[in-house]
Image 1 (tube, one colour):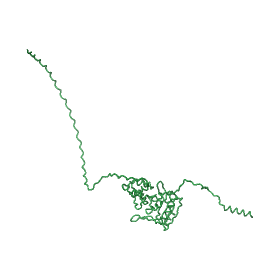
Image 2 (cartoon, one colour):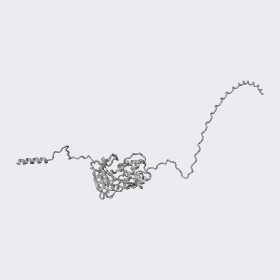
Image 3 (cartoon, one colour):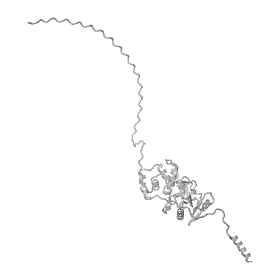
Image 4 (cartoon, one colour):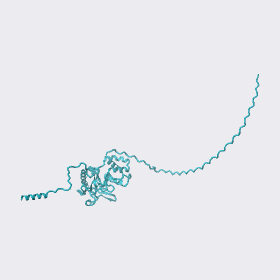
Length: 333
């Protein structure tokens, strides 16, 4: 009987035992020092939709983000994509030397209606303060864990300025900068730079070079074309939202210089351009045009001089006769 019980117990224990693992076995005793997070950038968006539609779009369509922050009185933060995976939020994008940023970024969508075109112009919707208060700790947690630099906390309009405007000029970037999460130009340095650029604005090539240095992707055309105005407007949305007209003005130049040269020597004022256009004196009587000088008619050729005839030969001179002898002179006694 004892033998039967022992056999049954052994069979029961064998059935409960964990089966041996299959596939490769990994030993995690050691961890390599040379590694970093795949996430180099954090990109902020607005959804241009309400809460329900935003959830539907980001979960059922070919677009996604790692996080969604709602606009409820007490905002909810949805984690829609695991951070180890790429979300489809950036699209065709670039920043500095990186392109196609889906694979190197974390995306946050913020529920916001975006903008509307009105007779008075385009109007952007504000962000509730409760939403920003929920967003800032989320951003801080992400950039801390992934060691994302403040200059790499971006808007969709930074990485795709020719086709995107979000999160728009109503987004309070300055609050994120005050929390140490976003790079921001020093106000004192901007104030020192403004008088320098008031003397003479840089040319368009300077603005294009500075925008590219900061990270924006644009063609260095040297002219104020449509793409340059659009990228300038994207820059102004973030750092000077009161005026986003895309013009290369004094304040924009000071902000760009303060960001790209935060501690170096201040630039020297550029020399005034040389005016090559004619100077017009008002109320001056214009001089009548001078009549054209008639051409000088060609002179007739000078006839050749006739040859001089040779002089006739001189006649021969007759010989001179000899003089007669003189008579003797008598001697006086």
